[in-house]
Length: 253
Length: 198
Image (cartoon, rainbow over all chains, first blue to last red; front, side, top):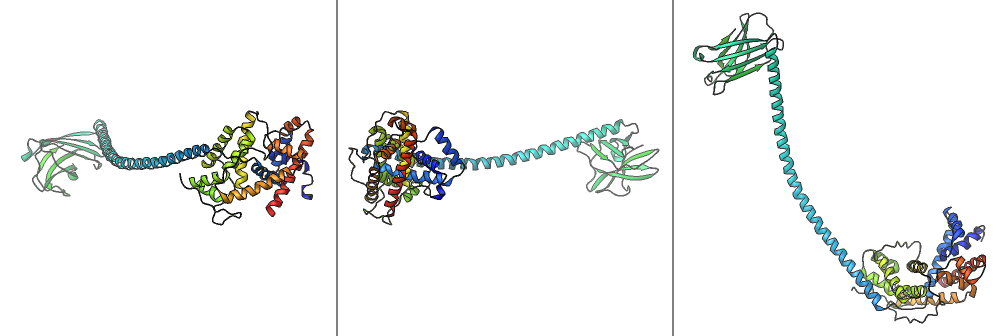
């Protein structure tokens, strides 16, 4: 056969290879040839292996003892049952894992929400602290600034026993007011702080007092001013008014 | 134990009878009945080949257990496109036998098809009839080979000897042994091909 020309030696080796009897240099030589992708020799090996397998039929017929079959299928049965049990066990295990995971998920969800809530509270507290610290720092800075002025306010009229301290920081346009012993304003009324520069009052905002008579106001809207300044507190309608209209309860210069 | 897959006794394959390929597919789905059907078909051939090759009944029994257990575990990869199931299972069996042979070469080969063991009644009549028919032809083709060619094939196939060992044992040149193997193989191929075509 023309197509097999040049392969005679390899085909001979292929037959021995299929028999499982090829060794040494001959084997290496054929395997190297097969590695080159020779289909002719590869087919030769497959065909030879098919023929050789049939030689098994030529072996003298003998039946294996019944015990071989029994042992084999007993082993197969055990393995099969073990596999089913394992699958069932796996299934139960997975169900348990899934249930545990669901519970854990709910728990984790609640825990996460609690953590979130706690974290939010902590964040808010931290922000408040930072804010307070910032305020304190700003207050301290304002109090210690060279241009800061301290004004003592004295109680007037029905608020004779009241007193207050105001700190004005013109550089930062800040004003801090601390009030003591001031009674709560009448219903529908509020206390309003005024800065009076050159005879003109400027509202610095409204504030309330605690039951113990303490009150506080912090503002950064102090207008530029030079010279003498007066700080006063009046009783005004809730929400405040553009110009003072009510009785003065505190004043200082 | 589940019932063996039923087959009808006939020399031609019944279209309803499961083929080896069908059984293999079911076996891969852990169908024990398919394993039993394959055992019914090939158990005695596997045992016969192992006994013929190894010469020790106990070892042959172990080979049968190993081969069918390997099938059950589907650890062996069978590709229907490359070989028939028969070829495949006999190849597995032979390889297992040769592994053992190489571990201890103590067996003296007897001649092909002249064993003394008696076959049990075939449990798988249709396949058994087909295999019996094929076996008759294989034995006839093998015995029709010139003695020198038959001898080298027998020494290689059943005794697992290498071509150098065969040459040494026979006291023949290596080239002569090689060409005898090749010629014997070609004649067997030709003979079995004509059987398949008939």
